[in-house]
Length: 523
Image (cartoon, rainbow, N blue to C red; front, side, top):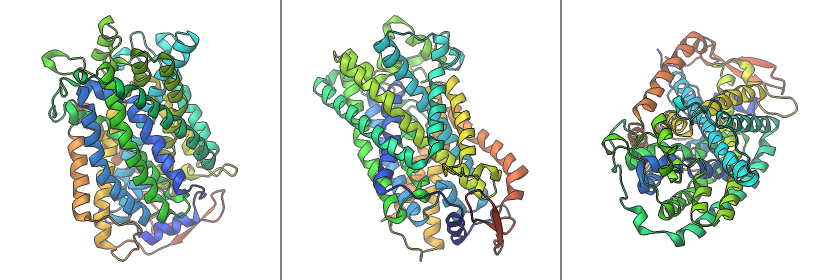
């Protein structure tokens, strides 16, 4: 039967202990990893795209996404502390609902992390071109080098976003040379980022004009399923900014005392960051306004679309929040704090690479554990003898991320990434319930209270947001899944270690392996 291969938890933990990545990170570093991913993507990059969908209702959108994220995070905290190995939602599904569904989740996580990393690379490029080149050095990069093609939602005369391509490749190199070094680098950038946003809040909130919030919901609360607009549509877009807590769970195998530190990293980073989202959104919209540019029928032009790019090229919209590639620095310049705005642009320039780093980190670890299970070519799980990182899969992933960042706009990338994100989060919530019923005796250092309400609420919330993505983004997941299923049945299912009744046990860092038989799973 197609759902017969459920990998025993004992086998998962044994494989991880034999072929594992070095444990180097503490609970505090894990929290910084989560903050590094959460604060940055949604605030520095998606503020303009979210405002185009919801206007001032972006504040409500952050709250909606935050509530759904909290219940999902609680599920993640329990299962990540119970099963502290790499693989995130993929591994949890493998241990509860079987290999087939685990493959679909792992394949969706590719969509989540890789596309999200590309989106943040595009966001970083906006600050680099605007603050560093234009404002600081007076250099104007030609349109054909600073944006993707207009037909893909880029800019007039655009061909390739060269800065986005370069930063993705540089972060890939950094991640390849070592996890511990990457974590220390990330900690410095998180400090810079939080400081910059605190200054932004202090300067903008005293100048908030209540009239800027009227109308508060120009596109309505609910724009309709598949429309991608309104406060709920904006929540669906910016939800992927919260994947920092998901990335933390993928680092469980490289964490000291994961039973204690993983829940701290997950819940702590989420609570800390949600407050920043709402406060920064209030300051940005309350000072210069955040009304969307409306199209025919009073419906906002789609974020990341060719139509919106043409409107933003017009003089009357050149200063609009929804048209800015460096939204927060733009806000400060508009209210008379040009110097501070440039400083914030510098902070984004320095700090956004930490977001790309965390997303790439999570993506490569998903590939690593899928390869370790035999579902992907085992060369992908080869660990570098000096750096102790999965260098081959890191190089391959970084190359794909860089190419996507070079040609696609941030709005479209965010919506596409969310399709995989929401599916994976829903499956984690289901896995918590299944594991509670299947293995109630397993120690759970962090146990969700009211799990029979919390987990279904997480599933319902994820499904609701998925249905509020733009229709085109919704369709990406089934199309991507079909591609994944072809690969699974053509290659992975026949090479699966579990399907062949073996578990991979590795005794040295070079990757030489002995395959030890185990009892095949019962049908």
